[in-house]
Length: 149
Image 1 (tube, rainbow, N blue to C red):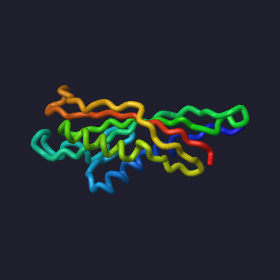
Image 2 (tube, rainbow, N blue to C red; image 1 turned 90 degrees about the vertical axis):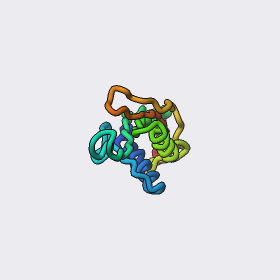
Image 3 (cartoon, rainbow, N blue to C red; image 1 turned 120 degrees about the vertical axis):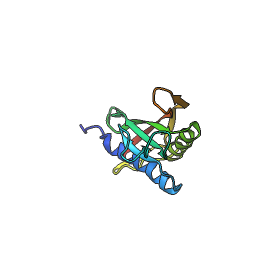
């Protein structure tokens, strides 16, 4: 019996897709895995300096699926993107960038074929008043199914 596909290469592909979309749009959006990326956020005194928007990717370990003949053929993989900016419009723009990178896009994972990404969660940009000054968050989650190539 074969082992299920590892999730980490899927996460690598999801992060790379956002970074490529940011580069293509000449955007300063930075991407972190499970934490705020270095160099993002306020660049000096909060509220009185530039804010570099960012995305934090929270991956799932994936769920194997298949048939009796090959029970590990597929991996149903999901990733959440928390998009952060100083303004509501900024958080929405970062979420749009992530959607462009993930929704209806294939994950480029070696040895796997990918179905297009499907939007599972798309929460509106909201203001977080627990920080001073406030920042804005938009959260989305996308799922892919990959198959042994």
